Image (cartoon, rainbow over all chains, first blue to last red; front, top):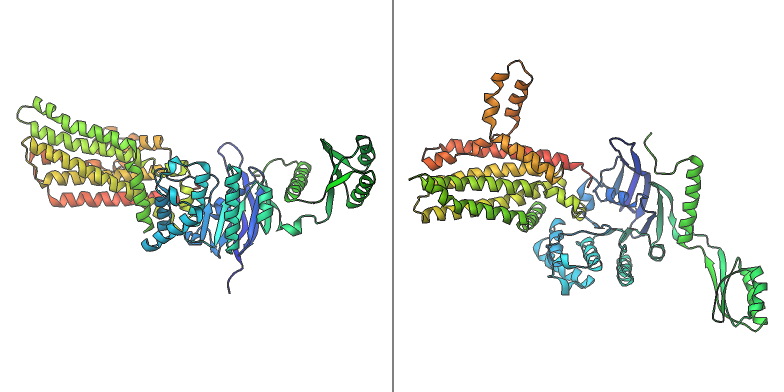
Length: 325
Length: 253
């Protein structure tokens, strides 16, 4: 029977030791699974241990203890990476190669034969629109184009499992949109995608499940719909043509966020107060332009988790990643 | 196939290294410039040109092996190009062997080019070239492959500058191993004696590959000696590459 989990980590730990300083845990005993066909977002602040975890999974770093498995093969075995595509944060390539030569090289490393290598170039150049730039050396490429090449390398051999480390980092809005579309496209094709990002709106849009890492520890994991509070947190209302003198009573019910031209923007704590405010405005002859109920976003959840974690650490007098005892 | 892919790429990368062309230029200057040096020794000019040409191949080939070799693995880690390579289904030993083979092929090309150019130059100047001249070049190539293996080992351990200094020391001491066997009797009872004796057995003896003066002066060299030198180079290189693989096997990149 085919295993459901494509990636499994068991007490995965990476400790860095210094000659003169005490060692610290960059990744501290984390265990989680990613199921086949799901898109998993890996979140955390800078230095939380996301890239270290990804590097251990991809065989770049040797775990201090614990294990990781891809398709039930331990990641220290290169065969575990046969069906894996990896896009590192800020990918680096051989500057003297062209995109065509680069794809050919990675096809060889994946063990793809000569005839299939040509087809692979055609497939990837079509998918990522690389044909025009196929014979230009990579040293002349912009950040966005490099990211495209990095994505193409990750897709060499049409892998089932993609690991993308900050795929949108440093890209302009157009580049970000393009990469987001590519991830979405791969999701539609049924690929399993594990990606880390700081852009929480993208993660919320693309991921089925998320894991939050803080100072090397996995502090939360779950389906987005399950972890976010589904109740309406606040209601935002935009009103037009409301007399300034009449805003005072509304300010008792909610918070005045912004005032511009003949518009006012209010935030109310719950739907009941918002309804009362809307009725009052209509009665006074104002026009209600927009009523937006606000649910908890991934960003809200992330911030909430960080505050809880920071408070706990302050209580325990631990401010940094766990230090060697 | 993966080893060949890494080797091809390393060859392509090394060919683009500016150090190679600077050293090749110097080697060319030494070979061509050997003519005026030959004038100093009356009637011996062809011998001097042959001698300097072979010495030029040895020294400049070693500099290519040291300077390019000690940065091979380090540069991949430093420039982070290794990330997407190790993330492929590639064994780490395949990467190290591929790197070594790529540079070895380049050095083969460099020595082949220099020996052909110097042979043509000698023939133009009226000298004679026989197969022993090319066998001497081949033994130089064997020595350079050994130096390359040593350089690849240090490229997995240290920065290119430190690695180059260490390998250069190995190269210099490896040419003077005779001193290491002659000196110990003078240090009887001192701690220097066992150190010098141990060094004699640890350091590769690069003099084994030097049949330059025999070839230049027409002194016969046995084929069994040539074979012995080839086996010596293969065994030592294999040992150094094995150590490089061991060092790289559990290295964080």
